[in-house]
Amino acid sequence: MRIFSRSELEKTVKLDTDALSVVRNGFIALAENRVAMPPILSMEVAEHNGVVVLSEKGVH
Image (cartoon, rainbow, N blue to C red; front, side, top):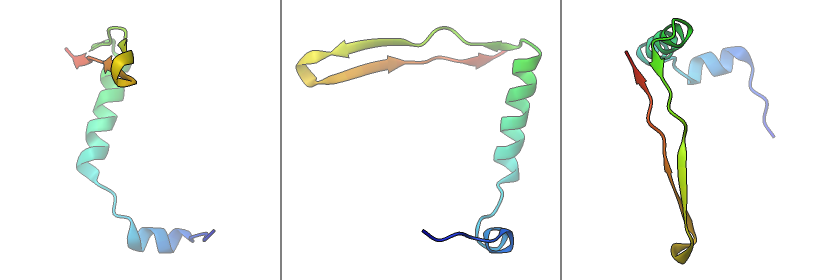
């Protein structure tokens, strides 16, 4: 296993500030109760050895 220093990570991994802003705004909307989060629905599809999962979320 290789352990990277902070400076090595900062040189290699670039922070996507647009994505960070979207995540931040999502948490703000959640805290302000502006997020609709219906329960996740799932259904087994035995003949195909699989599962279908439906997850719908939204911000008002």
